[in-house]
Length: 77
Image (cartoon, rainbow, N blue to C red; front, side):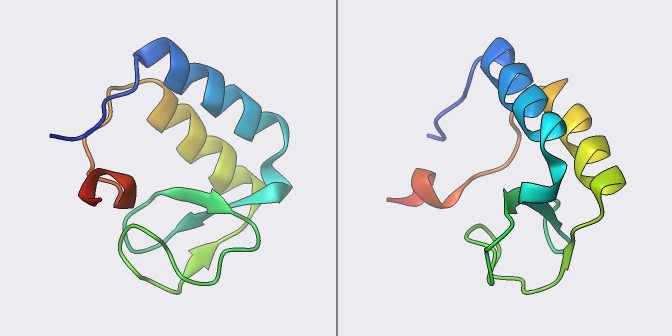
């Protein structure tokens, strides 16, 4: 069963990301937000990313406003 973060924790993480969007990028394969130095998405193994600040902030706000629906790499261990 996936580890589900409380919505308040997701919102806090989203706010942290939105405050510093240049340190992150959005995976174009699964729409996860990953660190700026990531070369391959740990969730879907895609190598295409959108690193524009606008997209990072938009995706952080979306993900921070709803419950987790995806399975992450840590859930599979």
